Image 1 (tube, one colour):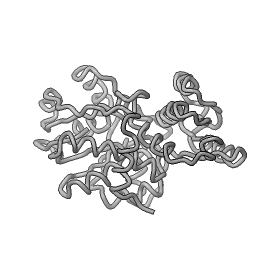
Image 2 (tube, one colour; image 1 turned 60 degrees about the vertical axis):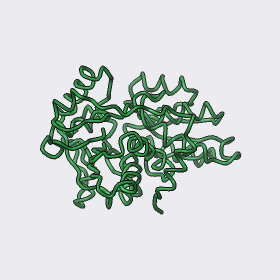
Image 3 (cartoon, rainbow, N blue to C red; image 1 turned 90 degrees about the vertical axis):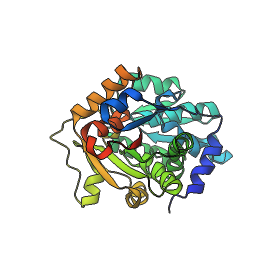
Length: 300
């Protein structure tokens, strides 16, 4: 099982008219601050404020009538749940989301507001996912994985297609890694379109799942510490996403908390846009490792 460039092109055609074609803009001030030529893709302008809609919707649009009628289920505390709930409601597909107990009340409310049945279960993602799998079997639903799914990865890969349509000569793509769906999709698209483009993974130093897998060790979480980039704090990267992304990634950088925080603040103060910690990860990489990006045309 692998991801083909044609899968991403097909996803782009499928998604047209259903999601925002978000802008990719040059930032003169961020370029001056980092020493790189910075182009920013504003995926926070999607209706649910994240790129996750792309993968979820690409999956939903390919389901057969019987599957749609029974409904879909996912485990997620964040953007995947809202993207899936919003588009499933739009398409008339029943949706159930299992969220861990620690999920912020606002995220639970927003997911319910999109028409989802929300089940609260477990102390973390793994327990919520186990509950979702059992409900999936019990109710004969379709499980929509937040990252370890080829249709989901193809949808996320459309981000890179759009960036390279707008700025064809981008030289470096620093891409956040959580479960690996975004980087698997984007790297597949980018490397097909440009052999010379560098793909750089970006992970929280507190929870470096991809780096740990590359080194053949278990992810060590730093004494129960949490990260402001909780959207990419995943205990285990996907098996499928890893196998697709690993050969396409040039390097992976680990980011300490102050750089995520500075990235969020700069987006707010310079671009007047709100980014969550995971959304500021690419900018954080430019701040933490300026020598790796200086003078290069970077797509964030």
